[in-house]
Image: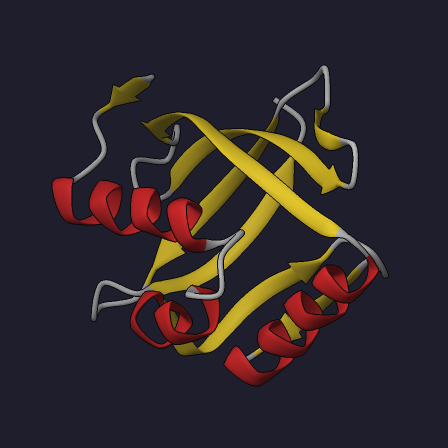
Length: 125
């Protein structure tokens, strides 16, 4: 996996976040990775979410309809030098196994002064 120019603390936080996303640890970890007023995309409905409670409800809804997976494939400092772009491969787990999309996406993160994620955006690479 390629990592380019990402500060160590941000890299460690993001790696751990992707490790726990598909597990029961995600709710507990949210408290130490997302700022309380995080700005997060709801890709299902095409709107923005604000705050941990809205993100938690969104994730609960996602996991109620299926088991989403996201595999981290690379991290780099974005062109502006302030955000971190994470290359990910989305997937889904069902009764027949894991199914991965043929294409990747980028999750782009901004961080608050306390080091927690303050905003996430999704874009095509």
